[in-house]
Image 1 (cartoon, rainbow, N blue to C red):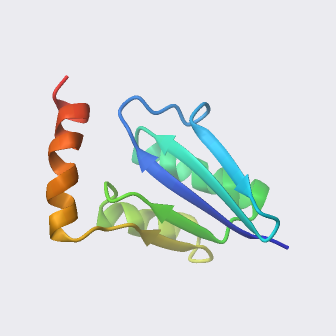
Image 2 (image 1 turned 60 degrees about the vertical axis):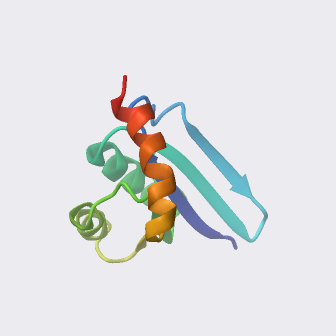
Image 3 (image 1 turned 30 degrees about the vertical axis):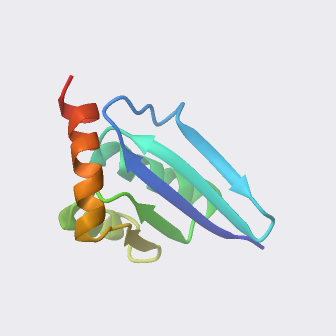
Length: 105
């Protein structure tokens, strides 16, 4: 039986139905999905919990503490919800790139 997790990232042009993958090693099944909004993240998490029995949600740094709490509550506290956060120097490296790609258009 595999450990099942999902990594969810935000992108303004993300299509939650199209931008998805699954990596399955046999003992670890990692789903990935790119969403445009918190509502879509909630939808994906609920769907994967019901259909795949996910045990862990990994979120990109764009999710706020409030988003994390909302996801945890929506999953009834039965699925781990974790956030990938970088250190200060790493944030300084990615911030201008994200600003250019997401907001500079």
